[in-house]
Image 1: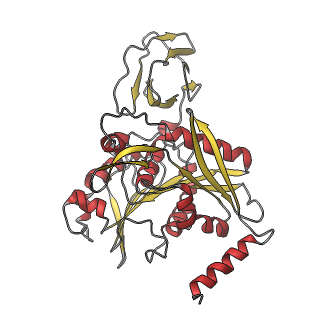
Image 2 (image 1 turned 180 degrees about the vertical axis):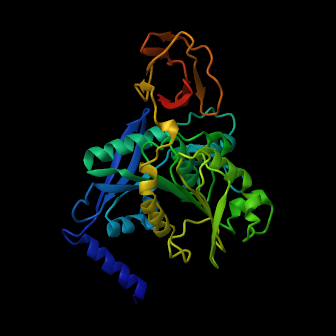
Image 3 (image 1 turned 90 degrees about the vertical axis):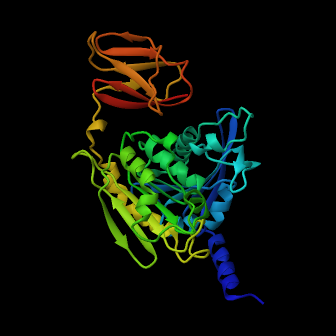
Length: 391
């Protein structure tokens, strides 16, 4: 006999399959750095909203895939209700020492700072550029759908949450706000964001991954959680240009600490950290836990739109231009220079790149960056900091 839930599910499946009312799912593949990459795009039924479709990326955790979170996250259903496009990418597989027993396993994993320490030893694995994959996905989506470039968001779970932290810093030029559940920003991914965009991180006080590194039975559901999370919170605030002054919103089920005071008067941005009582390492969807992260994150994304798109931090008012960006060989720097002008390039970890030869003219300068490894770099010139990507 069918139970009530089964009947509702069958009715919903029949509804979305009716002509003219169905969401449109398309499975895409693209080649990025000689690797086949896969992602799912879901477009809601009905008319295109004014200004184009908002876009939400959902990044799975270790061992997961796009199709899994297409099915369980609730994002495609939310997209249908609110009329936005949802994207469910799948990461590449790497050999890692898997939690909790450090047994070697070939699993899907987004490339974040912890992958270096978690990788299987002595294999010389080549980690691909997932941020480049994200940029190419968005290019593909933009060419196939009418999207609103001021409303592009990223959500993630576990390793996917670490990756959305990284996107908030390395790809703030394309994302309006980011958020996630169940992980943190790792030190080796930490850089000063060129543009500070809102970020919301949610963890459970019974998350076994946090419990394992803090040696407690559960994370304290009170303000002492700030002591446990202090290195991470400081790291995020530094990267987003925020002070450590916070406000607290508390309920019986959650504590939310909001940091929104910029270090510079002209700065903008917001970082929220929430602790959820009795939640373990899951992406809560309203069925596996009485809270839907998707509903909360979508409301946060919606509220964040004006904050991030109108950001006028002085770092963003560049008098210097760099082209092309991304770059493969020759980077051209356009602006006014003298013989005394100092130009320096640093990698994402703050190490200065030596041995570069700069060719200066009155209104332009060029440098051969072909020997640099692929990744993100910071150009310091005239007191400005500009970001470029080396392919």
